[in-house]
Amino acid sequence: MTHNYFLLGGIIILLYMTFIYLLSLIKKNAALVDIAWGLGFILIIVTFYLMSWLNNHKLPGGRQLLTTLMITAWGIRLSWHIYQRNKGRPEDYRYAAWRQNWGKNFALRSYFQIFLLQGIFMFLIILPGLLIIKSQVTAWSLLDSIGLLIWIMGFLFEAKADEQLKKFKQNPENKGKIMRTGLWRYSRHPNYFGESVMWWGIFILGLNAPSGWIGVISPLTITFLLLKVSGIPLLEKKYQGNPEFEAYKTATSAFFPWPPKKLS
Image (cartoon, rainbow, N blue to C red; front, side, top):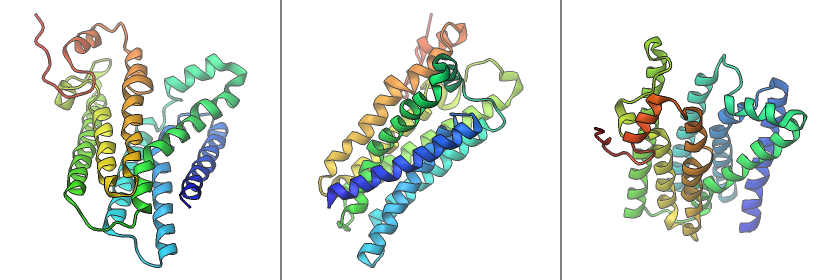
């Protein structure tokens, strides 16, 4: 039964990412996958919540509903933020570079290396959410309160960092400058830090579920991706050699918020 449960999750993700891939071919813009990222999590968690409701003939418990609402709120905020950021702009520089480098193979390679790969990561990251929905445990515990508090902190941290950066970029006087105020004074990527913290919170919330410890793969995956793969490394490569950024990099923590160094 458990294997079928997770298999269904994988099938939903496969179909969803394939649909987004085909849409990207029509629009000639692979950056659609960034907008679709948060919405994919909503599709999965809401589908499993409704399935649990139908199968058990009653609404799932408070923890299950809360988790569904948490992931939905995060997904809507993130997808809307990225949509607003990308609206009216050409394809994101990362995908544009791959499109040029891969040439005529871009259509095939992008399906596997962009869309299906992100689908795999989506499954790994939402895993504790699926464990919570499947669980029949309803009693609230101190561990749940800790997980919820951590999630709220991460969600607000990410949302505030995104808002600060958006306002900074909207000011024409800041064109070409590096954001170094607000949360960005203490971390070069406070939005990424908030994202990681949020998924650690959901993992903790899922520890009361049977085999809930397996969900640790979720925060470990997103934290690794942000620190070593598609987050910080790709973004900072864009600013490599920029004198202002190099000074910012020397003084400011890359991920964990920390008071900036005082340079002589």
